[in-house]
Each structure stands twice: as structure tokens, then as C-alpha cells.
Length: 483
Image 1 (tube, rainbow, N blue to C red):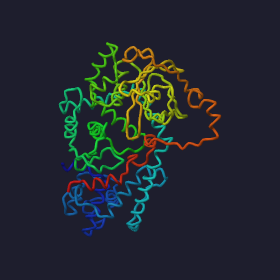
Image 2: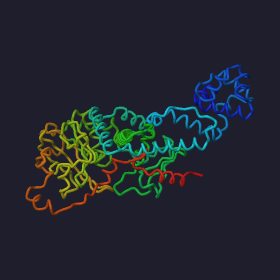
Image 3: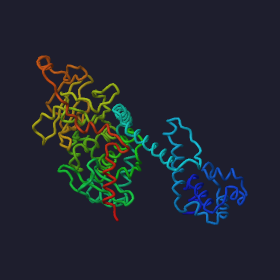
Image 4: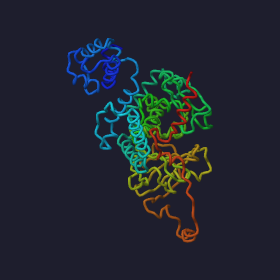
């Protein structure tokens, strides 16, 4: 790094404190140094306090006056404790937390004890921590979900920049197209500078942990029976590919999670490879989520997600997607086909009860779990056709369904089904209220205790990395870091 580059990369606060540290170590007063470089003491004072950035020629003069080289000012020894604390506090005073509290930046006098400055920094850190914890209130989470879903709808759930990123990564490792192998996933990790390590003691609140300092990616040594080792690796690497930093809000955390899942799907099922196959299937009137799943060796949910990314943009087919817990709670949703999902007053779908008459609920009652379930459902917005499957996870059973309007059914395998349903979920008596005779008999004679699925609770986490026990993560990294 050149001297000029170093000067640009080192902030004025640090340079100023190094100048003051070297000056006092040599027993020079501010006036002595000012006289030596032919500048006013007030000008040097502003440089030492970081309020003015010195030009390179002045830095060189100051270095000569202090009997050192300019590198000592730019990349010298670490600052003493007092200087480091002062810099940290001055930076904090310029941040949002001080501004939000209405505290104006103040001059840090020499008479203020270092312990007092440390106490201010500790209070600032604690306020930031509490702000992080309170950021993801239930209403905040629902609003973030609604805003993100509106964005996805406007873009037809298609993110061109993420498709491009996936294409660039696959080209870099020489992937020819088609199913992504575990070997290719490992090659992507190596391309990004990571080695893979499988640990039996991965923190329970994490799927993976990246050690950025040592280029190590830790994953669980026990992949669930129905898990996919490729997905775990790609999801962990996607954040690095996308340059994600620590999320500053729940909305940003949610957006990062969507981008991570999207990029993982785009790597597993490359756009350039799959779109011609989907167009050919449409011409044959034989589109099938199961065929997409089998062709790329992915889960049904991954195939369903990927189809919604591509269906409207490339096939001109509006679609909707639902993931519903066996309790009836909607955990994921997307639509651009005008289907009328149940929502709360903010427009949030996640956490609402899915209508019992919809395909997503009826499929749980089917004994045949080998073949897909198809159903036409008449709603207040028209008739919709859906294909659905039930999959198991650590949270219990979930149904995953993809649906289209009646007019678009002609492109799909399963359009000849005789299964029909009628949903009037906008009317309370459709299914949200029990039949009158049952309600009369049991309303005053029952008291159920709700069992909330953990997937629902996971939408309302706290902390900078919501839902993650950072103490466990740091202890894990400390234990596994190379010595």
C-alpha cells in the first residue's frame, strides 16, 4: 500500500491521536510543534482532535518535526488506551444513537477520567443492544413481511441481479448446467476462499457458522435424513457472495434471508438451464413441480419456490405459493395471481390460519403421500387449481402448494383431477367458526392451550442476528479456531 493510499484509508481521528501521542512522548507542547511546522497552534489542535484532515505535505512536515517517518503516523504502533477510548467515544457521538437521544457532541477534556469515558461507551453499547432487541416487535415483523411481499409481487418474485450472480459463480467453477453436485458445492466454497469443516457441536440456533478470519465454514456433521448437504453449504456461502453485513433492522435481516434462499435456489436450478425445459413443458401442457424436483434432485419446496421465481417472468403464468404448518398456520406465502389470502389489519399473511377447504389444508387428510395432490377450489375471487405435497421437518409436518388461476390450469399435469373444494374464508362461518351445534355444546365446557409452532416464533426474534445465541457462536469459534 502506498503512502497516499494509507493516508486515505486511515481516518483523521486516528492520525490526530497518533500525532498527539508522539508529541507528548517527546515532551513537546502544541506550541512547540506548531512553531516547528510553521502553523498556528489552533490549526494543529484541530488536526489532533480529528476535526481537520491534514494534507500530505503537512503530515510529512509533522513527521520530520517529531523525528519519525510518515508511516508512523499512518500505520504506527497501536494507540494507547486513553486515545483509543477517546476515538471510540467521538465516533459514537457522531452516530444515530447519540442523535436520537438529543445529545450534542462535546469536547473530551483531559480532566475527564478514562473510566468515565469507558462508562459512557458501555452505556452507548447497552442502548444499542436494547434497541436491537426491541426492533423486531410483532408489528415490526409483520410490516417487514408485508413490505417485502409487495416488492416480490412487483418483480414477479424474480430478482435479475441474483440470477446474474448465480450465473457468474457457476461459470467461475465450470458448472455445465443441470443438477448441482456436492463436489461442485465444495468447489464454490473453495472459490470463495473457504474450507468446509463438519462439527458435531454446532450451536443449536445455527445452520452453519463462518469463521471469516480463518476462511473456515462449519456445518453440522449430522445431516437430517431428509436434509440436503448442498443446500446447507450454499445457504451459508450465499451471504458471502452477496456481501451481506450485520443487519441493522429486522426488515434488512428478512431481505437478506430471502436473498440467501433465492441465490441458493438459483445455484441449484440455474435459470439458463431450466427455462428452456419449462417452456418445452408448457408447450406440451405438462408442467409439473415433481418433474422439476426430480430433474435437479432438490426438495419439493425448493422446486416450488424456484418455479414461482420463473413462472411469471418466463412463462407468463401468475402463481401463488403457500407453506402451511400442520396446525393450519401459514408460515410462508407469495401471490401475484389475485388469490385472496387471509390477512391481519396490516396485510400480513404469515401467522394467519389457512382455510380448511384450501388444498394446503385438505392435503393433510390424504393417505397417499407418494403422489401429488391436486384440487380445484372455488373462492370469492374465482376458481384456483393447486398442486400440493406434505413434507416433514424439525418443526413437524408442512404442506407446500403452488396454485394458478383456472385459465392457466391447462398448462399443468394434474388438471384432470376431480377433487373440488369451496372456500369462503372471507366469511367467518366458512371454517373459522365451528358448526353451531358443536359450538353450543362445547363453548363453555372447553379450555384449549395453544401449541404455537416454533417456525412462527422464529419470525419474531431479537438481537443483531435474530434468533441466534451469539454467546454460543463465539464460544464455538474460540474452541474450533486453528491455533
